[in-house]
Image (cartoon, rainbow, N blue to C red; front, side):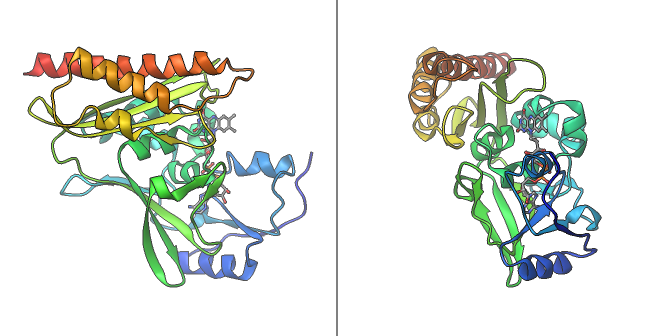
Length: 291
Ligand SMILES: Cc1cc2nc3c(=O)[nH]c(=O)nc-3n(C[C@H](O)[C@H](O)[C@H](O)COP(=O)(O)OP(=O)(O)OC[C@H]3O[C@@H](n4cnc5c(N)ncnc54)[C@H](O)[C@@H]3O)c2cc1C
């Protein structure tokens, strides 16, 4: 099917993009990688009057690490940039683990992490990763910039907290206060598929003690699930067989899966428990080795 007719604009500055969105009055959409929006246009699930293509905006294709360890990902940083990043493997294991599991190579060449957060698909991998890491989005509008924690940014399935005339300019991952550890596991029916279930785990350690924990779940609820009880079960002690099992069980309980063509609800809950257990066990083994 062809998309409905729309006006297309390719602004050269962020201010011009914001002015165009204002002019669109809620009937305009930002186009980033187009890997979610274009299929929606073609299916006519979305029919905006105006497309504001931000691909020509200068200086948004970065991902970088500040001196204090904060990671910043610009709105035009592609999934593939993160997959090939030399910055992430040592600094941010949860992101490094997730990057190659998002979609397929063709989608990863165009799609963006920020676009994925804006799209707010319950099966989006990055929303879980950034939630587990306690990240936030920086939005820019006519009144300047504001910061929105990602757990509040995703307001429901395919809904986010942006005003109609705001552009999400970057995602920010706070600097870990201790040693960062983590992982992302995803069950997909075939390579490149959306998650049947996915789990993001992000920990910070002081010595062997877990000082911060984040666990978030992909594809097992109406939106990304922040499994805070599961994460809290880990904080304040070393990883042990008991704390790992407790966290895995609580993560399973936090999941709200539905039975569908990808599997039964109980199967997906089992995957969540198994994946959280597996990631934590790997971390426990590697921290023990390092100690
Ligand atoms: C075949 C296929 C398989 C896929 N598999 C997966 C998968 O396994 N896991 C996964 O997580 N994703 C998957 N995706 C989705 C993919 O990751 C998209 O790249 C991502 O969801 C959206 O990023 P984008 O840059 O392409 O955004 P676009 O498609 O350009 O935009 C998506 C939405 O976000 C808005 N938006 C985008 N950027 C901004 C911004 N800076 N400010 C304000 N609003 C903005 C747009 O207006 C639109 O509503 C798949 C897509 C395809 C086509």
